[in-house]
Structures are given as structure tokens and as C-alpha cells.
Image 1: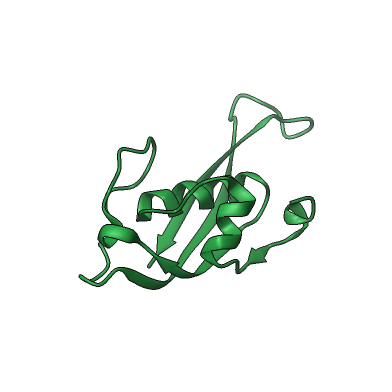
Image 2 (image 1 turned 90 degrees about the horizontal axis):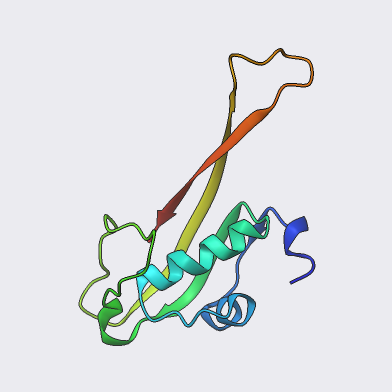
Length: 112
């Protein structure tokens, strides 16, 4: 875990993600939550490989999880799950350029 802030891209499998984050990946929403943890540690792009969802990746009620992702086909696994965090800064227009305080926002894009 100590080297994760130095990485731009990581490609862990499901077991490795579970070990790194402490989150058991039983659904797509769990994979999203795990990716958020890894993004918060400084990794920009996470590509989880070899994911197997019991019960067809059924949903659970996780906070802040997107609900607009397509569910995988009727079998119980997907090949990979990708997540990318993109940062954008907003300058406070009332602040001067020298010593300005910027607000950083981000969006996480996820792909199956």
C-alpha cells in the first residue's frame, strides 16, 4: 500500500483489490467503492482484472455508487472493471492569482 500514491495506473486482480482496500467485491457497486478507495490513495487509473460476482453482481445499497452502469450478462463474471479519476480545478474569481486558493473537484469514470 505504501507505493500506491506513486502509481498512476494499477492493474490488480479481484483478490489483490480486496486485500488492498479491505472491501469484499460481491457486486459492481463494491468494485466502484474499492476503486474510490484506491483513487483516494492517489492512483489515477485502476483496472481490476478477473472479477467474479456471485449472484450475477446483484446490487447492494452502497452510498455514492453510480446506478447507471449496465449489469453484466447473465453469467457470473466480467473480464475487467476500469475506473479513472479526472481532476479539475476551479479558481475562486474573488481571489487574486498570486496566492490564490483553488478548489479541486474530480469525477470518476467507470467502464465494464
